Length: 103
Image (cartoon, rainbow, N blue to C red):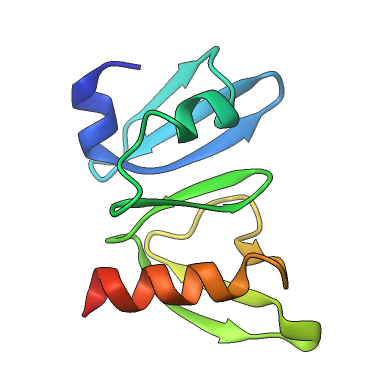
């Protein structure tokens, strides 16, 4: 994934064995990199691993709702076609990331 795609990425999500990168211009790009590989190349101030299937950009993550057992449901615009549910373990990190990125 090139630098332009990274800077314009709204979210990155698993698509079978590939990762789909969706930009804020609603363009889709497939890459053979894994989410784990891409996560290490992204700016952690702008991007956060929300769950096993999804990395979100701070501008796309508008708000979150608390769920049972300490989980979060992330409200993203535009909404991805995979669940944006954050685990109980990651929830405190995501809350902090949201507060720092939107503060």
